Each structure stands twice: as C-alpha cells, then as structure tokens.
Length: 295
Image (tube, rainbow, N blue to C red; front, side):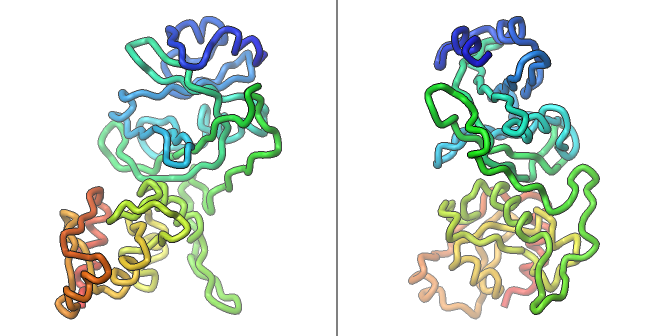
C-alpha cells in the first residue's frame, strides 16, 4: 500500500488536498486526518493554524514539531491525537503536507514519532490551555518504511491529562525526599519554552535547567506541577534566580537585587538589559510573588 502512495504522491510536489481524500479517505478539514481504509495518517501544517494556538515547524535538530488537534480546552489523546501517539505500534504511516495556497498542499515527507510533550498555548477563544506537542523525525531509509521497534516510544505522562487528575501528593519519603511528577513537569517546561533558555534562548538541553518561579518549598502541590510556575534557564541565571538575586518585571525585563555588584554580574555576561519575551499571565502572577523575595 505504501508503494501505491508513493507512486501517486511525490515529495516536493503540490496537489489539491481533495485528491488525497478522494484516493485514501480521511477528514477533509482536520489537521490530523487518519484514513479509515488504509494504514495512513495525514497531517497538514499551515499558517492558518496559529489562530487556534498551533505551533508547527522544523527544529534545529531536524525534528518536526506538530501541535495536536483540539481547538478549545485542554488537548486530549483522542481521535487523531491518539492515532499519532500509537502509530508505530499500530503500523500506520504518517505523511506530512504543508499548505502552499488555499486547498493546495505540498507533500513534504513521511514522519515517525519520537516523543510527545506538553506546553501552554491559547485556544481558539483566547483561553490558555494545555496543548500536546508531537515531535517527529523523517523515516530512516529511502523506502519510507516505519522502523518497527527501533523508535523509542514516548513516555506516558505522570498523571492523567484526560481527567486532569493530579497526584494526591508531590513528595514521598524514601531514603531522601523524592519529587513526584517533576520529570514530566520538566518535559512540559522545555516544550513550553521551545527547548531554549527563557532569557538567552541558548538551546543545549544538556545544560538547561527547569526552574520553578515560586520555589518548590513555597508552592502547593498544584503549583509545583503548574506549567505557568516555571522557566527554562541556563545555570548562571538559574542560580541567581533561585537565590532571589535577580527577578523579572511583568514586562519580562530583568531586575537585579541591590545586594549584587552589577560590575561583578557583567563578568558573567549579565548587563541588565536582558528580557524574557514570552511571559504569560500565569507566569506574571508567579513572578510577582518571586519579586517580593528579591534580596
């Protein structure tokens, strides 16, 4: 069946979207369109999705990030989202098309899912919600066959996003205190900030730190796992921020504590002009509490 698909559609060529559905079925409007008759999932990307809070595109490591479906409220693993999450297990192939004109799409490539993450984005009504971010790679050989069993499956979230049921507690006693849910929280923060430092946009995730705005010990269980209560910071900024030696205005501009020697900070590459450009309303609410503790 894949041979039939690639004998009809050529990478880099443009086609009426209607032709895809005439031949293989699937929804003619949805961004994610599984075929009911064939083991294919078609995904469509274009600028028109921005009004629904969708953020798609190629990333620096040659992965393609694609926002799940759902225009209002938190995204759930139902319908097309579930089909994508399980596509390697079910043996279905994912084909990416990008809009070039109204009703016209370009066939880009076949994709295979590497992982999924979560981020905060506005829905169609302008309300902030939890969205799903799928991250794909191009398939690994020229035959465009899914490498069954060779792709690491994305981990399930630490709590049930469908019911939004949080863990009853965020700490448990072992030999040391272990933070529950923190690994998934880190993944969501990294996705929210595009895997870059919130301040500098530095992008080496081996070094970056998922940092709470209102610290763990000062947060409730709900606040500890709230995406809005977090930034991704490089180590220098994380250390200063955690010690309340720097903070940020509601506008995102850096605030430096009077107890800090500004000339000494300049040796660390901090000049006082730094700014976070994507603070949400929720971030600002937590940041106001953080500034109260500025030393």
